Length: 281
Image (cartoon, rainbow, N blue to C red; front, top):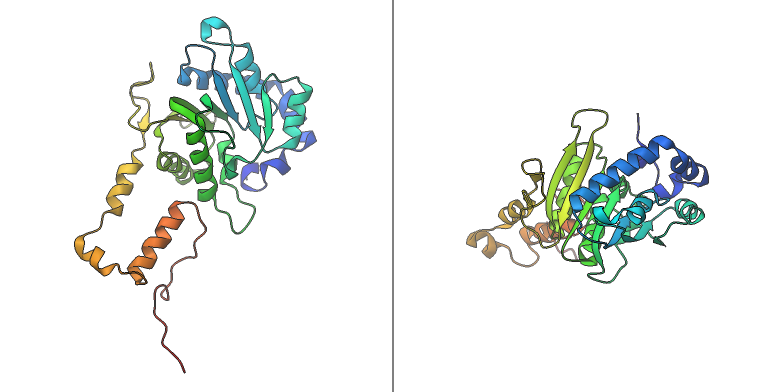
């Protein structure tokens, strides 16, 4: 059975009908509240904070943020970002207490640096892996999102992204994009191997291993140390450097690899890549 996020963009899927159906479903409300509470536990905020809610939808998570009692560190102030006009319309009808912005997170996070104390995203990041235009790529959308998210958080802040990866490859693509943006990252999977499986990507601004940093989760977080592996892949010997003159095949392949890691659309390599053309008269 195909998933909606693999077939249609979020702003088209969540039209007026789907947005109201999603918001009024008691099952969805229960699941969304439980996942938001889990995300807040991972954030471990001791006092009221300014939180960015990426993919805020109709404000179900925001309602919990606004009503959290003082003994649990609340209530929090929040800013919501979503690509669906219909979802934000429902949020306005429900008198959501947060500030709402209509924007595609796959094009970046449009806030000044260090603006937020923390960030959450519930069931939204997998939608960023879908592309509508040929000049876009899932890697590019994820790179822009995580780079913008990293910049918008203050030093030492945390972010928790709950998402539903299609498979292991997509999960690694998401975590890899977060690590390349500079985050310290850990992956936590609840109810693994069941229909209720939920994946939480726990991020820390400033990088580094965050295993054991979050109370009560020691040993449960798998740290994705992809930056070290990327550095090892990028090491070249002196002989390779000497051969990498501008315009050579090695130089072209290196530039294409750098562009691809930045999320740019790059043409696939072929036997003609880097081949010099003969001069014809």
